[in-house]
Image 1 (cartoon, rainbow over the protein chains, first blue to last red):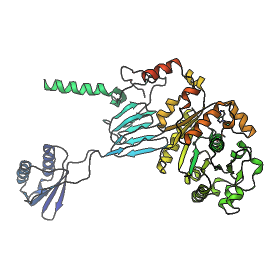
Image 2 (spheres, rainbow over the protein chains, first blue to last red):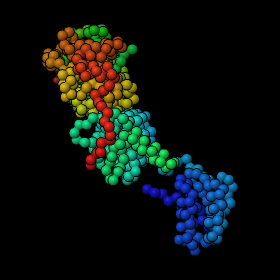
Image 3 (cartoon, rainbow over the protein chains, first blue to last red):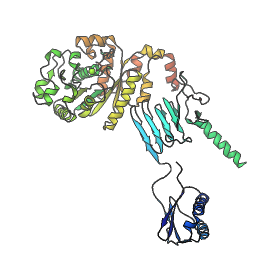
Image 4 (tube, helix red, strand yellow):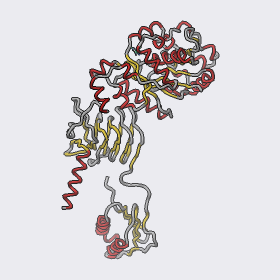
Length: 215
Length: 279
Ligand SMILES: Nc1ncnc2c1ncn2[C@@H]1O[C@H](COP(=O)(O)OP(=O)(O)O)[C@@H](O)[C@H]1O
Ligand SMILES: [Mg+2]
């Protein structure tokens, strides 16, 4: 679910711009620009107030915003410091840390990312809207990106699940008995199939990519 | 300082009653402890049969909790083993006849009189299980080397942890070394890997258990029984003695096992690349 970076509310003498600050400023500015442009007559004139959630605006950004508003005959109401409102709540990906083994019959459901310092045993379930990270052996069922995030991953020190799900894709290990890899692995979606890759390989690739970028 | 131990498993028929009878007898016979075995499997009693005390039942656990008799009247003293007592379960009433609070009260009363209170738990995770664990300090979880039994044992460990039990101990029953050797049975390592709790002991599959059960004479008292030997060791461990685990003395390790032990390896080899799973 992509949240709008900005919410504009009408007030008695103008508007209040509420900025959810977790993206870059350009995106925020563009969003405000589009809003103002689409409601030109409606927004013309008056005072604008700015509230920032999850972060703050630099003086430079503040000035840019003032400039933008001027085009619509709006004055940015000067506010005494602090201009930012930092909310303690996390918006994006809250993390649930469980320092125990999830045993048969137990089910963990969480709207964010789940990190387990322990095993996930057969007969148990872990369902997360974000990623799932198991620092022990994952033998139960794990469902990452449960509300549709196809970029979600399942990573485990030992990945031996009874079943894996990422977003809407379900996968299970091969029927025939296989040797169990003795290294950490990561499961993710690639072309609508779940692929399992050694963690070190994944790491290696990203390092390589970075190095190539530098060249 | 007396202890209340519950013997539980989740799955039925894995050896809870056998274990209760043997540990109880072992503690009374070899350690001269005053022991009472409580049959909490109400409606499905058989601890009295395994102990050969069926014909001496007058009152039962439900009668005691309902105040129909005094505790002392319901306790059956085993004439063969000094200091060994049984509080039988009612055959006719069902598990809801007792509440966890009543069980807790009962255990505290027994605690005053006995060194050990052993509770034989019914299978399942419902009312009967809740009753059986209500008054207990510690838990022994019995499993057999079967996937379903281990799964249920794991469930029980989770439930015990949730009700505040610390460090339940594992008893693996009916292991068959020959089958483990052939790879046809879960090994001790496999089970401990999953359950991750301390191993109290390993009891091998033994015909003598069947014979002794039918005779009403616990195998622990039979010097020639291998299962009896395992239970004698377990008895000593409960008493705090360091006794090497049965694995090596009972279960002859294979050549490969020895190699693995030598190199500290398990029965797995690394695979080169990640497998692509299919839908
Ligand atoms: N180590 C063993 N070797 C052979 N038979 C066993 C062993 N342990 C238990 N049994 C048999 O398994 C059956 C179930 O045991 P029991 O103790 O009644 O299980 P539970 O109380 O868990 O239901 C009984 O017939 C018993 O004789
Ligand atoms: Mg039983």
